[in-house]
Length: 245
Image (cartoon, rainbow, N blue to C red; front, top):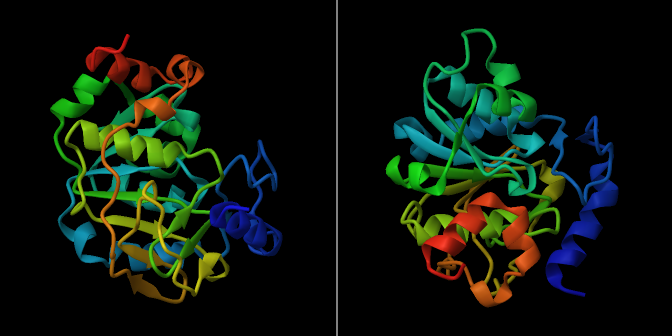
């Protein structure tokens, strides 16, 4: 069994004790990354990191564990880009002021992102420029920076799309917030496809990762199926842009 599958399955049983059930998926962790008890304290630590202080344009995944981070970014007037669930509707931009004052929590939820956000083409996204930092949820993360999602690889694909567009690179700060139970205190060696994080924030600690491998760059089209291209508008647009359609 691949180390990523092993890590996820190892954590999912213990995660039930601290996870906040999702209204759609309950405890089916293969379908979503849950919010967790103490997530606000983890986000406190994330917001104290150096990249957060100067950030003006950021990307955050739509994971439940990052609802509080998205709320704070909206409240702070930061330009926020969020992907739709499974990238089925591409990406949303929430410009400063897009969410009425006092409604930031609703704006941070998936339905609120779609309601207040502006749908973006890849060209419109490219025109906004590089991300100051990127935040992603995780099912589990090793102290060496190897992160495991819910098993479908959407964030890894988003990263590759962004790198093709010049929006991220190996120096872009990448952070995650997880419960202490989701941290594997061991050194797992990354595969060539792993997108390593720089910081891991939990309710009790902030861990800076000393990355020893470069992050992947560019979409590897030989690994992309026609079904994926049809299901993800952003991927289809990039497919056309690079002359593969």
